Figure (tube, rainbow, N blue to C red):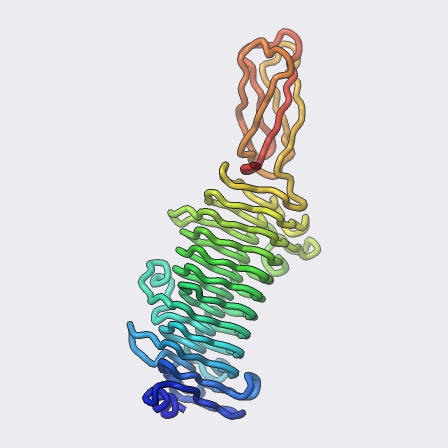
Amino acid sequence: MQYAVDQTELAGGGTVQLRTGLYPVDTSIKLKSGVNLQGEARDSTIIQLAPDANDNVIASGYAHPTYATWCGVRHLTIDGNEAENPYGKHGIWGGFASTTFHDLNVKNANCSGITGSFDDSADAYNAGAQDLATLNHISKVWVGGSGKDGIAWVLQADSEIYDIWVTEPARWCLWLGNSAGCHISHALLEKGTNSVFAAWSGNFRLTNFTAAGSSEHSIYFEAGVAEVTIADGVIGSERIGTNTWDGIHIEHGGVDSRRVFVDGVQFVGNGGLTTYKYDINAVTEVGSHFINCWFDPESYGTAPISTVSANSIVRHNIDYVTEASGSATIPNAGTNITVGHGLYTTPTRVMVTPVGDPQSRFWVSGIGATDFDINVASGASGSLDFDWHAWIGDQN
């Protein structure tokens, strides 16, 4: 098989066609630029790592920093043979650009199912030291039982992942480090530590997805995530511990995440058996939008959304109150009154208007997750009435 790949590259590129059958390999198949490795059907054409092979199943055919470009793998099962081979590595590994991986089963890898970088360590991803994989396309791919991550990739410049199913990796279903300009859609991501883990990434979209069965945060933005859209998806809490982890967790790691757009996402509970702490926990974010979402009352233990920044927009959500209003009265000779606002979290704005002459200076203090105080400078001569309005996020 390797000879066929090499000769096809020398001939200027083309397709290496594999018939139905099992192809054991004791060293990785090195994919070369311009070469497509193609089976007859993904369930019946199988490349399997031999029991004693300490290698990847398929790898880039070039050493760092040269990419394999304009190549592809199609209509195959790639089997890391983890049950018989404790030494194996990734299903697909290395530096690729302008490459297509289509109609594949990738299973039983000791490490990640598919990883698109010469260095897939956490330090390399977070420091931006790994190679950037550009214009790659992954479609109609099932990844199961990986010993590390399902798909771990630095995706840049209009890369696409769509129509994928990643299930039961040891760590993350989908890991995006230093990714920008990519689109993930029609994805089922289930039973990983996190369905999506992203850091130092921006301008990517996750749409038409289901993220379910995570043991920790379902979608975890660790640091420096910006201009991200999460839309038209379902996030389920059936595997995580009660009131411990979050549906979407936006962290900072020293750098705020900015402008995270969550639009049209359903957060689904599990009959009260397990819950997220927050469906959306905006630990540190600036200018985000949380709109058109549905929060199942059984999906969270503390609140649907944690505190959000004053310039974020939170509106048109089902089972989540974003503003409240009412009236309050400071009694005769009183100097303050505590008002319960009934919102899930600390309001970003509170407006208080006196009804009639307040007689003395008044102000608002102690704005918290459950209430706030209206104060006057001196004891009222007679009762004082006020109207109030409290908002979460920017409602304009």
